Image (cartoon, rainbow, N blue to C red):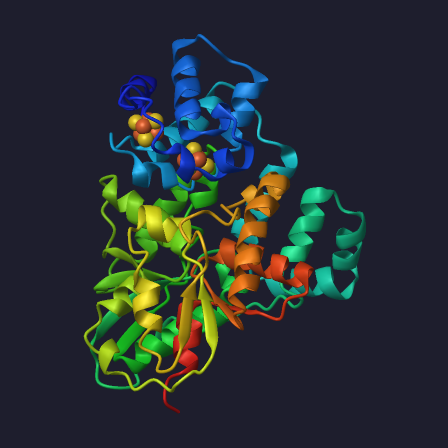
Length: 402
Ligand code: SF4
Ligand code: SF4
C-alpha cells in the first residue's frame, strides 16, 4: 500500500468504536491511542503530516497486530494491511529499529538453518553462556533466555517422509525458523499423523523463515525476500498443499499468496487440513480421560479464519474433557517479538490466560502457534503450575493406535 491507498483504507473507518472492546491493548489501558480507532486516526494524521510525535510512534509500536479489530469491524477496514504498511512507511522515513531488536530478529530467523547450530547451541548451554545471559543480559536477553528450551536440539530433517499406509497424496511441510527448534516435537508428530493417513511428506531443505516477524517490524522487503525463497523451495515437488504447523507462519504464507504471488501449492494450516481430511474421522484414536484447555492463536482466528479446526480435531479423542480458555479470542501477548519488546503488555495479557488455566484446572494446554506456546510455557513455569503445553497434532499423534 502506498500512502494514498493507506489513507483511502483508513478513511473507511467510521469511528464507530465497535472494535474497542476486542482490542487487547485498549483493554489494558483504556487509552484511545491504544485502540484501533485511535491508531487509525494517528495513521491518518501521520500521512497527512498533521501529527508526528514520539507518542504517536509508541502507540503504533504497541499494537500487537493481532487483528481482533479487523474481525469485528462492520466497515471491513483492513487494519492488518494498514498497520503493516504504516510500519514500513515509518522505516522508510528513517525510524530506527533498535540494534538489539535487529540482532534478535536476524539470529532467531537465520540461526535455525545453519549447519553450525548444534555447535552454537552446545556452546551457549555447556559453556555457561546461557546462565550468564539469564543473569546478566539486558531485559530482552533475559526474557529470551526464559523462553528457550533447556536443551536446544538441531534436527536433521529428511527430505521425504513416505506414507506408512496407502498413498493418499503428497504434501509439503513448512517447518518455520524458531519452530524448527522449539516445535520439533509438533513437526514430527504432524509428519507421523500425515504418514499414518497415507500422505507422503516433503520437507524441502531450501525453505527459510516465512518473514512474518520482519513484516511486523516494518521490513517488507526482507519479508518478501524470505517468501520468494520459500516459493522456489517448494516448486516442482508435485505437492497438493503446503502445510504449516505454526499458525503465524501459515497465516503469513497464505496472505502472501492472496496478495497475488503464486505459491506452488495452496498454503494451509495443518489443523485445517486434517479437519477436512476424509481419513481423519475414521482414525481409531485411543481415549484420553484428561482435562485439556484450548488456546486459539489470533493468527488462526483472525487471519486463517479457522479457529474451530483444532477443537474439531481434538473432539475426536474419546473421553477428552476439552475446554476453551475464557476469552479465547483475546491475544495472549506473544505476537512475534512483542513478548520481548513490550514485556509489560505481554505479561499483562498472559496473566489473564494463566488465571483462566487455573480456573479450568487443566493438565494440558493445547495451542497451535510457536510464540503462544513459548510465552504460555514461560508463564506456566513462573506460576509453578503443572500443565503440559502441546500442539494439537502432538496430542493427536500420542493417541494414535500403537
Ligand atoms: S470497528 Fe471499524 S469502523 Fe468502527 S472504529 Fe473500529 S476500525 Fe473504525
Ligand atoms: S491489531 Fe490487535 S492490538 Fe492492534 S489495534 Fe487491532 S485489536 Fe488492537
